[in-house]
Image (cartoon, rainbow, N blue to C red):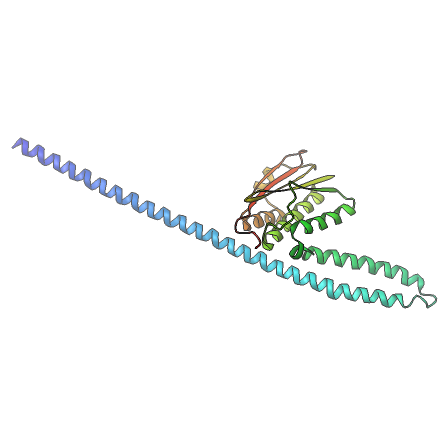
Length: 263
């Protein structure tokens, strides 16, 4: 009789153990399923955000291109025509003092319109590629003698390595970095290096400016830096920034070539 009671207790404990184990297994499987669903939802949400960001940036670029072409073709053309009309009045006496400064002002306006239109829609990018567009932009900055910018290719690869969409994103990123340096860093030199590899393109950017406390970036970001990080994310690029007070600013970028090569 006592043996039967022990047996019943044993089987009861065993049944309880099996039930607990069963419910634990169900709970773990349920938690894993919930975690997988959350992970899938997060991945889907991130992908949707990337697609939305890409669509927004693409529409911005189309609008930039349209405005740049309008500035160059219509306003620039009208200014040139006005300059020619003033030139025909040179032979009339008494208005030379008006024509000369007016033509000088028109010349300045033509240059400004050309620069704005080129900034909105970089010339030569679609035809000649990223290197040509960056070289033209840097040459324009160097002519102003505001800052000395050097470009290094390690090595120089003549063919285009990226799709036009990725080249345009990189052009915007690099020009924004240069604008940030000129505006905030009080630097005298900028060095940009392109290092193409078998499957990636590495780009380094550094200046000798006053730098800043990197904790500022975690606390708040300006629109320029937000645009840079958004464009880097859009083209699946990784990056690292290094700076400090009186230490200049450096940024290393790397993006894959696979799937972006121009056929």
